[in-house]
Image 1 (tube, one colour):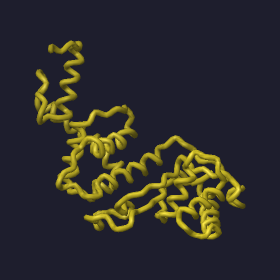
Image 2 (cartoon, rainbow, N blue to C red; image 1 turned 90 degrees about the vertical axis):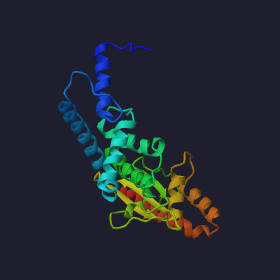
Image 3 (spheres, rainbow, N blue to C red; image 1 turned 90 degrees about the horizontal axis):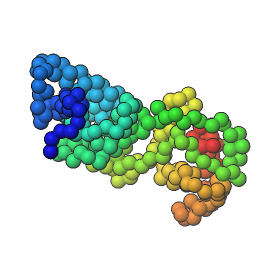
Image 4 (cartoon, rainbow, N blue to C red; image 1 turned 135 degrees about the vertical axis):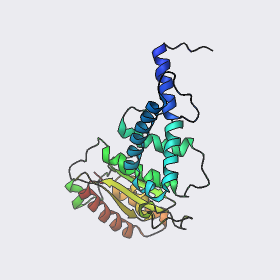
Length: 250
């Protein structure tokens, strides 16, 4: 089928296709190879810089040649759905998790580490705002309906992603999953807390869309865990008081 696009669009598409994937796309006619090489390097360097700033740990743990090939593959294979620079990290995560086949040289933690770094960036650039401190929750949170902030994300990973670095790269996940709470604080800094499975379950319940008070939520968790309600009530109330001050709950 002949190309029905206007000629200028055909030229643009050919130009972009070659810049993205010069190994499989023809050199546009009428343009010097040296000039196209300059354009290719410029666009690739910009993309690599965006990804390096969003995934600094992932870049640090990969061999430089492996990292650059990963970026080249993303640049060539993935078609971004957003024109916003801040959306590139999410597009890269989509590519890794949904489109790119796993490679023999991939670290076992690659996808989880990429997700964790994306979460940090997503919270940093989020337009959500923290609610003021609810002093009723600080005084006695048990009779109140408590909700998790949109800027607080409880997460579970097979690997301890918050500890991965060039000097620590586990090949197998530990026996116990890693539970984290990643949140943006009142000074607009992204922080994390390593939490227990019971704390994760509490945060999960607070994120549910129901009208139960904190006391009712905690009693249900006590039943799930098969422990005395009094201990869970004290544990949950202490956590929520601290979280209310930090802006994790409201």
